[in-house]
Image (tube, rainbow, N blue to C red):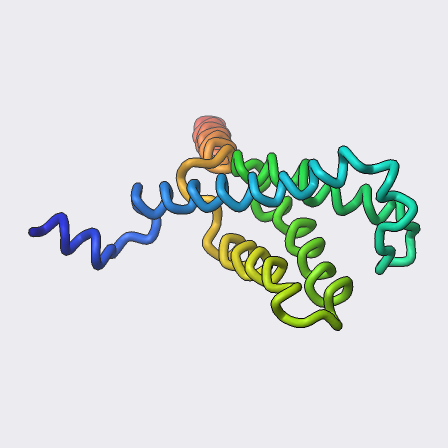
Amino acid sequence: MLSIIRFLFPNKPDGLGFSLLLFAFRLLFGVLLMSHGIQKWMNFSELSATFPDPLGVGSAVSLGLAIFGEVACSIAFIFGFFYRLVLIPMIFTIAVAFFVIHGADPFAVKELAFIYLIAFVILYIAGPGKFAIDRLIAAAIAKRRQGSFQANLFLF
């Protein structure tokens, strides 16, 4: 009974279950967005001439930036490596798709971009959870700080 209550009413948002859920969402949304980027990458030569250029940097550069946000950043996102930093280009890419590229389209056309945008903003706020490379980096930094703090105490 207690396990059911803990499942229904978790009191630790940084617990194991929550971290597993965050990892599952990172994996799901990262792979889904990466598949869009890989399709763009595979058709780069065809798309580079006609890809929308909302930033005014040229179609090929805009396509390259979209591929970076959808492929490279998705890989780092899945592993939780520079998690919040790589989410910025992902959110920007999707926001441009939703508000600019599909801005005048009916909601049914831009609904997928909206779902991605909301999911990435929520995941940005929630953080990567326990199963992320960033957590290992943070632990190593904390350990190094602790060691240098103790060494400084030894000098006095």
